[in-house]
Figure 1 (cartoon, rainbow, N blue to C red):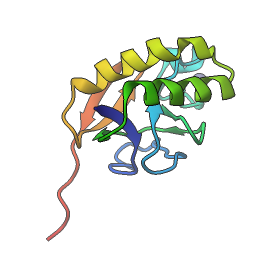
Figure 2: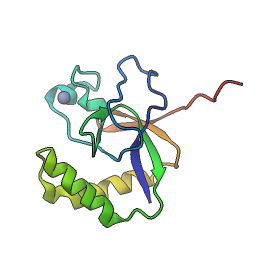
Figure 3: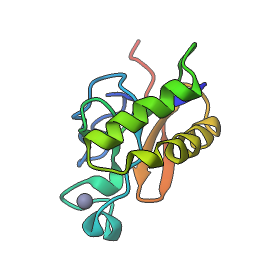
Figure 4: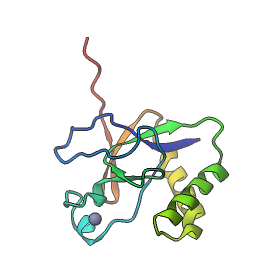
Amino acid sequence: MKLLVATSKTQGARENDFDHCVEGELLWIAPCCDDGESSPDSDCGCGRSFGGLSSHRGTTTALVAELPGFTYSDYAEALRSSLAAQGWPPEAAEDVATGLLAFASGWDVGTVLERRNEWFAERLVPAPPG
Ligand SMILES: [Zn+2]
């Protein structure tokens, strides 16, 4: 199934990009604070970032990846423990998992996404030189 994972691809395409996640870790789309809500370019960055389930850090670039063998219950469990560790209600895990899978299913594998609050757009990955 398709999921969002952290990637450094296209980092720097926006001046305020950041990537504090571990490459390839699972991501979720966390609700953002008031500042993030009013502008995706806020200092905190939450309105333009995806959250790492393991690192609990953020990245502005997410890769749509196919994870063979990874199941819905694996995903819900990963979300449950990460949400709990970060102070979010763990009982939301299944709803969050369902929502993220539906979101990821709408994009092609290999697509790099960026977030502008509730809007998501594909980043065009420049071809390698040569
Ligand atoms: Zn914020």
